[in-house]
Length: 502
Image (cartoon, rainbow, N blue to C red; front, top):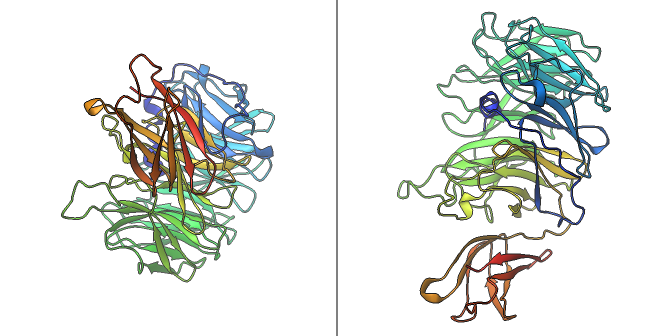
């Protein structure tokens, strides 16, 4: 998903309160998803010093009482900082700077004198704001720590009287803006630190381009063929000193740009139904990984099976697709927010499909992991049906994410041996015979212990959905209506939880 579109909803919701939860329970099984409710709009998250996670909270319409910058320790302790935030200021994206501090962009809000700016927060929580001239190029938005030790940023507005610009702020707070070299219709997004010492970015206008800005502010634009509706993913630094991206029109391809602007396209190896590819991340295996979206077969336009995947490409251009044990998802819902996790594997997020009235594997969101060999495991327990995890970030030995639908920040701690969490989809009694429908992430066996102590065993030959059929009369009337269900995977650690039997 385009990060610009995801964040346009931030000013639409009004939060009620900020809840600071207690430290995370050390007894929670490793590998399960844990969400920490914030009850406020979450702007962004970033890994900070000492393994801490930092985040921004804001409430629209200048209700500064709940606006804050927050910190979560690896143990789950939450602290929020408000002192230094001007009334009405709404913090947004956040990043760790080379100076050891955290930096975040902000909107000045309705009541503030300035249009917005960039602020600095120390590891101890001391906030200093630096305002831009009001309404010059829009409000500062996405930002990145540049290779030169400064922080660089783009602007949320696309159409402004003075056009787009790229901003730079020094550790002391001096702001400069650069626009020479940008097209009048440029829509600058996704700034990243390039391996060549420059900052690179995407121009997501109908005349898309990949851009580069030097530490001195010199901008070069490398145009791509015009697109009516560009879906530009990237650029993302690769292991080869180049940057990887895709425009996805008119035909999908993985694309790569060198430091001098030479562009290459790789499509061989992509399936014939691939519609979009991206986002991209460099893996520790020396290859680049990316999400895959596929269009449904013409014979089954409403099907949801096999419409997504994870791709891998070598620096030589060889592409491999993986989808086994990745839950089927609707069209245009490819795995998103890919990162390299603390365990060396690639992690990603999936969103719900909006079918909670008829739950199935495709209707439940997840945090997923794919190993270097292409083995996929998804973690769902701890997420709600309406959760939409995004912006995955590795910090403190865990994988963190934002869930704006539930106004929470979530975490999953990568396990050494996956607990292979399962999902109970339904418990029904057709004809008096109990049937428990379960989604499992891999091969193994399910063991259902009934209130009477009787055990029902069901083999799960592979990842997917299976049904445990309980004989008539095994769950007698008047007994407890709860049982214990255990999944024992072929590889990994068993996991047990109590379930209702209807």
